[in-house]
Image (cartoon, rainbow, N blue to C red; front, side, top):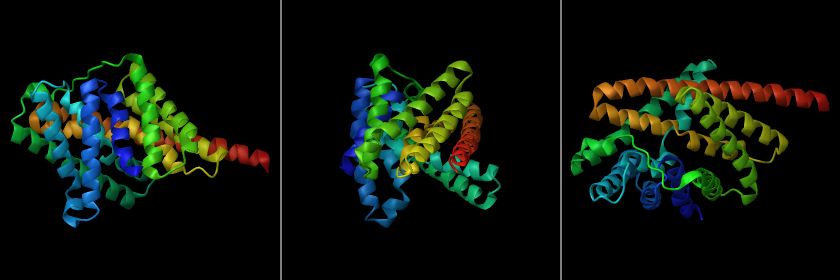
Amino acid sequence: MQDASWPVIAIGIAMLLQPGWANIAAAAVGGVAVMLLVKLAGRVALAATLLPTIAAFVVGAGVFAAAQAGWLDGPLRTLLAPLAVLLPGALMVTGMSELAAGAMVAGAARLTFGTVQLLLFSLGILAATTVLRVGAELLANERVNQLGGWGPPVGLALICVGVCLNEGASMRLLPAIGVVVAAAFGAQLAGQHASGAVLGAFLGAIAGSLGASVVAYLWPRLPRLVVFLPAFWVLVPGSLGLLSVTSVGIDPEQGARTVVEVAAVICALALGLLFGSALAQAVVGRRRDEHL
């Protein structure tokens, strides 16, 4: 069942990032390819080291080839869906949180490792664009929407199911995971409509962190990490970083501006994570004191 989780999660993320029928189909195929590469990496040490670059190249080559053939639009956002689970977004945000909390060594190590992973992903995508001679028109951050309003809720549900399959968790966790993911996604959308990506990231991180802590308090047997993990995949900070580094290689002027925006988003996520954890400690601590 764990093997089936990769395309399920890829389809769910595609329904959020690039909700077009051809894009969703490409994301599902890419999810299967990434799953096979992860299995190979578990057996071959060299493949494990180069997994980000290999996965990005394979998925990127397939998606860009499909776009060149006229089968789909917006390939850059499409290829992020099957790669999102491998992206180090959660790692980089955790590193920012540790730096803010004073754990400089651990935070710097996580940030450095996460940055290297992003560069390896971007190297794979740039290699795919070079080999296929992809034109600049296919590298625009274009979003298609053929599903309408029902796409995001179904996508969120598929991500939750995929997490349970991937982590070997009981399906009884679905309601708890769904509440946290819906809270993070809703807060992110509200912030984006109000002010933009930075506020959306901040509010989404607060909602995800606070929601996971409250759920863990109400149901102590639930693994907090499993409940919290999908919220990071929905916020997809690593995807923004991947887009920015790819833009740097294609258009340095535009890429530099995007790097600043992504850095602001990652900082907002880290601050939101810290703020949500502090709120959770205050609320949970007060409730525990009341029961003593």
